Length: 161
Image 1: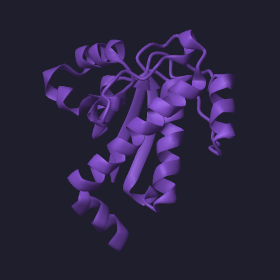
Image 2 (image 1 turned 45 degrees about the horizontal axis):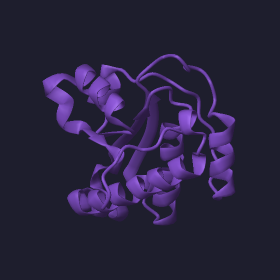
Image 3 (image 1 turned 180 degrees about the vertical axis):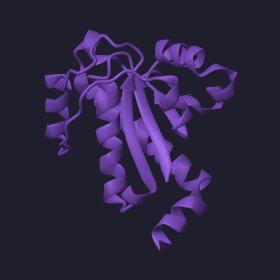
């Protein structure tokens, strides 16, 4: 089982979008049994709140459904995930502080593996949820391809059992 956590600031826009987009991708490829996927915020400012309605609307327009309640990431969560994928530089530096040297190797920016490394546009400020969706989808595709190569043995084991 590969444990993946997506992280943004409040856990109501980008990271839950990434969680649901990635879950949809692995479900389409019949890989759900090989992954445990969650999302978090670096802040507790939105803890307990659902996905922001415009983010949820964008997902539904792309045929992706699901619910989520915001929660803040902890060191426990970092320890118990194989990959922590964040949306931007601010999230990245906050996570590195929390992770410390022992777990910093688990923290990546989501779009760092794409052909166009970049931060995921923050729709809270831009109001451009389609652009965020496109950035996140690109990052999730690149990450999935990376994991399929990097963790092929684990995924093949899960398929056999």
